[in-house]
Length: 99
Image (tube, rainbow, N blue to C red; front, side, top):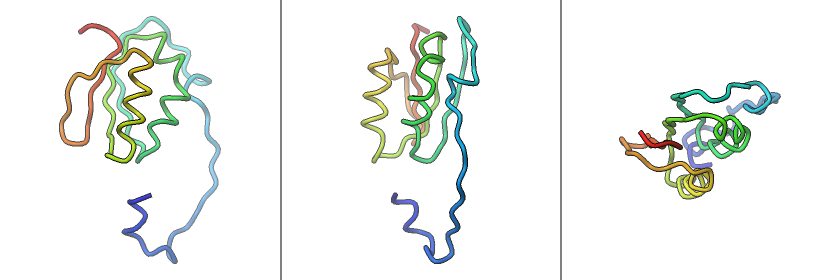
């Protein structure tokens, strides 16, 4: 990943962590929700793990996207019926309902 190039790899420590899918922990349905995703180029995984959450609610989504992941993330959101609203720098705004 490009951001790793700015670090001295001899000093980088790695840590194992467990992950839980958004759909497994969030059972909210039929609500209007604003959510921000800022996970340093791992947006695809968060969105994939929350497909049911995103489908079952009216969402305004703010997501930080870098050029190397933007296209794939936008394709995934389009398939999930999200529409682009606007951008501000690297922050992009989408919604899956008419505002």
